Image (cartoon, rainbow, N blue to C red; front, side, top):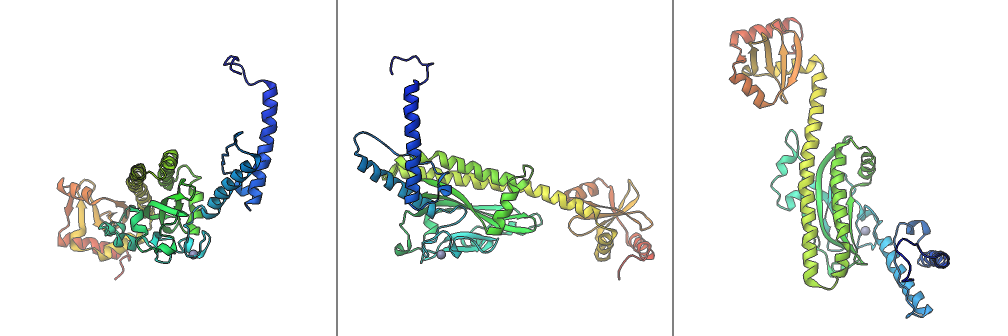
Length: 382
Ligand SMILES: [Zn+2]
């Protein structure tokens, strides 16, 4: 075989023999999966490598293959995509393996090995995050919080899986609140070591949110897509660590370095999501502004009814009356009290225009005249 030139492919005889072996190995795999009670459909996505050498007897080879497939299929059974392993029930499909509320995030294991799900806000408070106010401002921010394994297993007892390799969480990022289609939810993104010393990462949400995410991820234009893009990117980085991770098994120093790498990936993910979240909200808020601008005159008149004396201005350039309303609304009226339009202006812009003397505060007399003009149209509610 060493005498063949590079451009030549394997000889036909060799290919025919390989073809036979390939078919037999496929049958061996099918059989192994069947004997390990994993359905063939669940097994096809798994890439299992087995080693053959002449040094092994055929019985030893069979034992090795059996052991290998047992290992792989037990991982498949334990790791259910989108669910946290529950040590209490020894299951990834029990009621504890998923958040029941959309806004709940994974907050670690309880002493008895049950996953603990808490409202994202409370989770942040428990970690001492002082940014919680930013969840409630007019254009709320998406916040992301990184947790290390140590914090997540702080309460977990050894008898309930504290040291278990079944589902060993390395770290996680919790993200909230994401808003889409009237849902307000949290996302828990976890990096986990499996019993086969493989690193996996996965996103955990309530079942309802999961369906929405699957939907949203198909639409390129969706802003949420950018957040999911970031988690996919992090998943790729985690996957690329896998070979190093496997070979670092039992080597304390290497393991520590790789764990630090995982945490760095998680921290970058958190930063990236918060940044993408801001862009996401800018767009959402603009959409709301446009919706506001289409709102009927009713909102304008309601705002006029509750406006304070300092909220009335004359736009000297246009000779129109400006009334500052709630939520940065500025209502434009003509001098006879007819509502023309509503603008959403940032506080800065108003200040700027005032400074440029374009908006001049109405005097008391002007204001009363304006109000009576509006009232004469029968609009103002008293
Ligand atoms: Zn359970």
